[in-house]
Amino acid sequence: MKDAEILARMRKGDESALEYLYQKYYRMMIKLVSSNSGTEYEAKDIYQEALIVLWQKAVSGNLVLTSKLSTYLYSICQNLWRKELDRKSRLSNEAVDRTEYIDHDRDERSRVIRECIEQLGDTCQKVLTYYYFDGMSMTDIADKLNFSSTDTAKTKKYKCKKRLDQLVKSIYKASDFLD
Image (cartoon, rainbow, N blue to C red; front, side, top):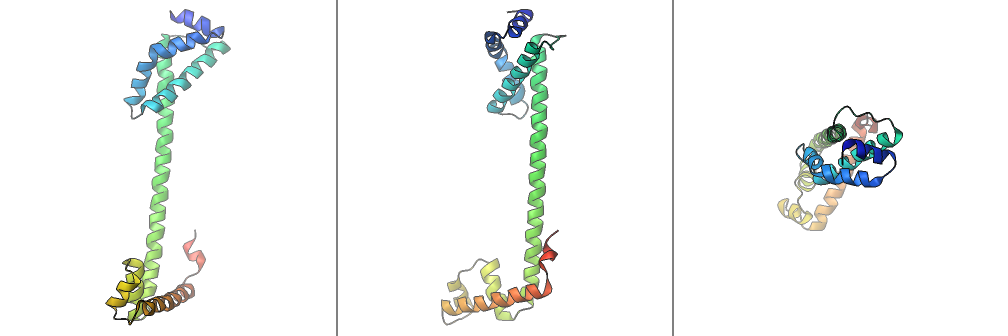
């Protein structure tokens, strides 16, 4: 089929012309997207969107071809894929920004808690640091600090944590951690 015949059929609503185009230029459009950081699945989506754009323009009568139909379809795919890459880039940058903010926030909280732990007694410092920062079990903490039992270590951790909470609340307000 020639370009003029394909367009004439499309203007009449003949979907077989669309199917013909889909088959004829499928490989070329898949290669365009795949060779520019896209997957075959993304390429199929872009190609289908491009065919819809072409169909709508042809049916509306607003399509004036100044090049071959394949060139026109290729440029539609190219533009759609660029927009998709821009969208993906923006989403990726937002995710990085969000991650950096979360990491900074976590680091800041950790710094504040460590400073407050340093103001507690030696035993509380060790119990809380071993448990929260080193990830040690209560049994290991009891052994390391020569407590009589794991229950003693748990009680000590509970009391030290309570003192730490009071200390943090006396020095900082919730608004210190919020923008």
